[in-house]
Amino acid sequence: MTLVYLVMMIALLEYYVFGLAVGAARGKYGVKAPATTGHPDFERYYRIQMNTLEQLMVFVPSLWVFATYVSTSWAAGLGAVFVIGRLVYFVGYAKAADKRGIGFLISALPLLALMIGGLVGLGLALRAA
Image (cartoon, rainbow, N blue to C red):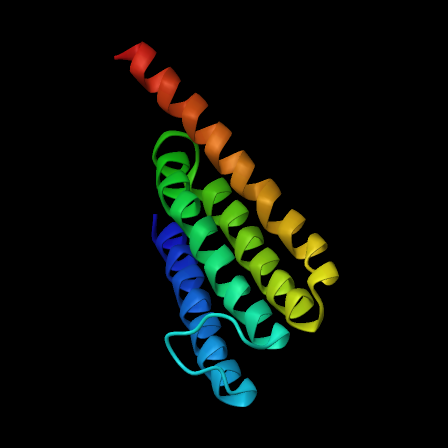
């Protein structure tokens, strides 16, 4: 489980860094808190952070369940791809909204595998109990 926890912590650190980027964009584009609109470039950074938060709400429990009932090594690998996908998403979306697609796809596919695999593994464990 050590690798799974490492991937989870890297994902959380990545989200934290995205939050710092939002703060920097807030200063750069003159969007004072608590406003979340006001400059299109700032708004993209804000959406990156919020979209990542939304994904983390599904990622973390799916990662744990998959690791517990299917495979820790596969969970860590899929989780690492998710983290890379979120980074690609950040880089693309920060440039332009229409450049976020590939990063979304890179992170969405392993997330889907973690969810479905976790559900199947959990279902098999419940059936065996």
